[in-house]
Length: 155
Image (cartoon, rainbow, N blue to C red; front, side, top):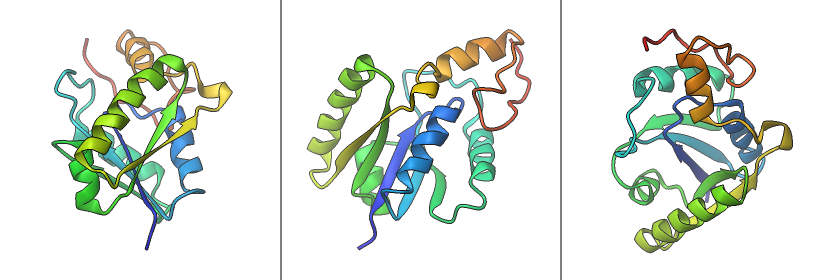
């Protein structure tokens, strides 16, 4: 049975930290599905469709990585696509507290789902989508933080 991991997130935008987690995840799993969810408590900076295309382009030569959008509960989507693992990156203890709560809830919804945490590579630990959005929104250069060029977005 293939070991399929779901790497869910809003990825708004997808960062080099996310890229690192996916690449390391492909060493542990047969397939990694990057799943762009819609966080009902957040307003997106970049459209999901645009981010899907940009991420898919980054992984165009990696057959074990798939990019897909979804709506609803992550645990339900994992069941739909046959993923028995959730892949998550942790930058710090604050991330752990947040992710641990979500992992417990996902396990309640889908008891066969195991969450696997990867500690962020030290050089990438300071990168967050929130900081990148702010720098980009005000015209700053974010090329060192993302694996593609972000489109110009109006303030």
